Amino acid sequence: AQTVTQSQPEMSVQEAETVTLSCTYDTSESDYYLFWYKQPPSRQMILVIRQEAYKQQNATENRFSVNFQKAAKSFSLKISDSQLGDAAMYFCAYRTYGQNFVFGPGTRLSVLP
Amino acid sequence: GAVVSQHPSWVICKSGTSVKIECRSLDFQATTMFWYRQFPKQSLMLMATSNEGSKATYEQGVEKDKFLINHASLTLSTLTVTSAHPEDSSFYICSARDPRGAGQPQHFGDGTRLSIL
Picture 1: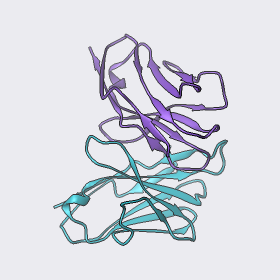
Picture 2: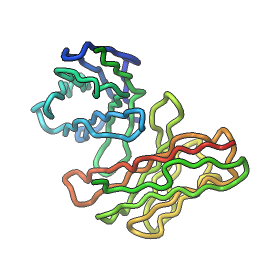
Picture 3: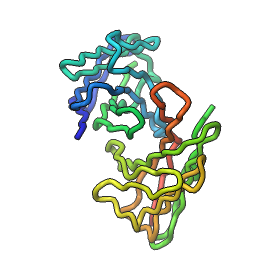
Picture 4: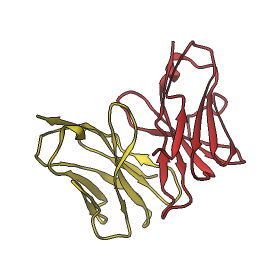
């Protein structure tokens, strides 16, 4: 079965600084998708960034970028120029084509003014 | 705007009552929807996969007679928590598989906060 691990239950970053959230996963599949979701106190699931496993190039979305290491099964999220609004729970997630998400346990990010 | 609507967003009811939660895809037909549950300070865990026109597939440990899922149309799946008790209090969230996009993206509803007194 696929599993997703986030080893950092909590992280904090100073406003305007950079922070990296870690994620590792386990799968025997060769084709899959990886995601980072943000969940603010409202508990909405907000897609931050997505990566297709067949793509070697790391995905980027404005201040958010990933470091995807397929062989190591690692998928970390880097947030640059952190803002107060970035404070939330962040979930790393995996899924294969058409199937359900498998979520990691989450990392609570605090942004310090 | 939202492509998946989930209703209600918050419900409080007495122990022993049944509660129905709706998950509706607004601008696409979703043959498959997924129901997740999230307890406080925990991650989302898959409860069941809802397939239009057929029986839902439940994850191990989820009571199918307690959590009734109906997916009678291509745009609507419902989750009914029957005879709810305080331990059923949780955050329930659905996602719908969109057949239109590359890789069949999935869109989440905004979730339902269920509190059983």
